[in-house]
Image (cartoon, rainbow over all chains, first blue to last red; front, top):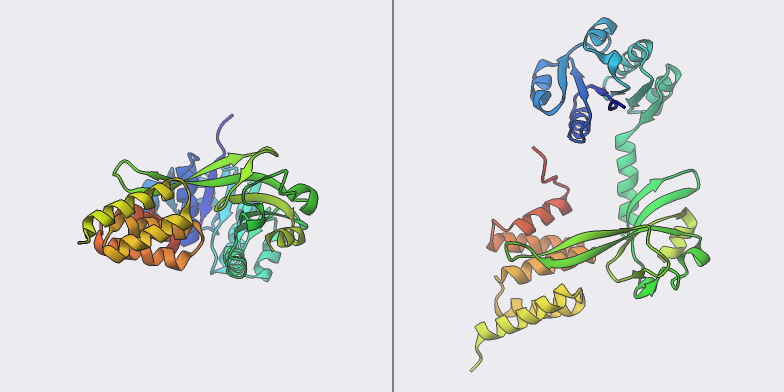
Length: 229
Length: 93
């Protein structure tokens, strides 16, 4: 099976970093922007970088966008261009189009004209930052569904020195532990002290939770809050 | 007569023993004693940074890494961990 091919239209900070990251992970990436100096900067970090007007269907077709499985429209600031580009790539038959939006109206229009997914990086980042500021023990939080969250949390004191079974995480709080991250101190090759992270994926009921461990858990928001108290 | 160099070495060895065995509270006490004798002890400064980072005492960890780098600006461990805490990607070009 051939690798999924991606295209990123709009190479601002978000778009260019997304393109570079996808390429770094071994996927073919076509990067498009209408400014030559921006395209020149990214050339060596992606498969192909092209100067083109994102609203010009013919130009996008010539750039080879039809070969891409997923196209990300990362034109954030100019809503009109973003919407037109979304329309153009959908008309070209791209199956999966992801649009970076800056407002609710932007996302509503994008979905109406066929966007398969909309994202709001700034809104999502602000939400995560707020969560980490009010609950410093919660390091990362991903909404799995309307009710369930996947959370990375500093192991609460009540669990220290206990096994997963003995700490009653599942029976008392209805929470599943997916992974335990342990921090192991060591001396590196240069003789300097350092700490490395080791992850126990899918830990068993008899695995022990120690002070300084990080737990990756899934559960309902209110259950997680209760567990974290 | 107190031999400061000797004391520093002995306490540091004990602190490192606690650190490597994840006994962080005991290690902190001893590393602090090391710094009372020699405030420029890079291993004590950096180890305290690592322990504070691990305890999510982020501001204290940053201070320790900054102090480490003030003494040894080439210290890779302190630089990498400080960048991570500030949010600077080490791989960023």
